[in-house]
Image (cartoon, rainbow, N blue to C red; front, top):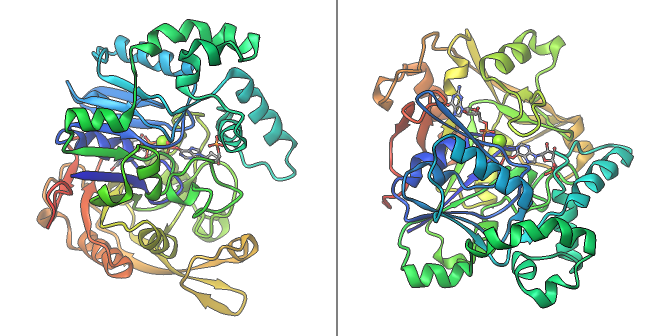
Length: 409
Ligand code: GDP
Ligand code: IMO
Ligand code: MG
């Protein structure tokens, strides 16, 4: 079975935690998009792992992970991350493989990324990791793939300064590089977990363009970004938070505003620890946006939802979510492409009573307070997709599984 996990909002939904949890049953985990712009956190007891390029299946002992063809890989960042894993006692040698078709991020791309964003009249607020530059070079057919730095003939055509930088990584990379499709065939991989990065609202086609990233973070990217045919994808899991967050600029219809929402911003940011894993920037916070979530469920064939951060709402008297936008005189329940419409959109919210009790120790759906179950039931009814996994804390153990996505009904 081939199972895809994507972010169903603007990133940081808790994909790392969900992928780590599901990787136990996988033969191999493949990251299919993005680069070191991602920051995926895994918490197991007192151990916290922060991954940027290495797929989140790596923490599960003995499992193989692959950096897929749709990724853009900064070799300096990759080997720094692997050193950090060694320091944390993770035995990764022989378990981390890299697609020969993935693209390379060079140091100059990082500088250019920062400069270009600074020059924009309305900056995107990129992570400065050279991601947009690498994907642009790829689209312009001026980029380098991992295979290119291993083949002497092609390597010799690379700019001497870049060659100087890349030389040190050629040997260590040579041991890790594979043709993903052939690898899967030879190994007869039966349970493949496909890990997305960013979120579908940051996808350049589906998301809030131009305030998006450049890799294909939608479920459709799982196929092309890993080398598995689209019909071989069996199931898509969308991860979303009980509220919404966004790092960087761009439309965010349900963002909290001090005048309307009082102390909610500070409250959610502190309790949810809403600071970026990659850049440390405070994340913008807002209500759960069901208009956007339903759009993402439908445009990504999401079969199964994983709701995270439900515990962050534990102390609130009431919990609100957005069911429509007021745009001018119109009430809208579909997610607009127009930037101005999204900027003008006022959330129409629906209130639910809070549960006012800690969920952090709950392990079964049946023991969640009725108020929390009502909130979940409403999300399912609105989106038409079952909430199969509920996360009530950062730790791996704080996970309620109602239906196992690996078991097809
Ligand atoms: P990702 O990019 O989607 O993998 O998510 P990040 O790791 O960037 O951000 C999610 C943050 O929330 C991390 O610090 C996680 O440890 C934490 N987290 C994940 N699930 C939960 C949850 O259910 N409750 C709380 N309170 N924190 C969570
Ligand atoms: P994970 O995988 C949240 C955002 C940046 C910026 C925009 C473009 O941890 O969910 P880029 O550097 O990619 O060109 O920046 O996308 N962004 C993310 N936001 N989580 C991420 O990844 C992100 N990756 C990029 O903040 O607004
Ligand atoms: Mg993240």
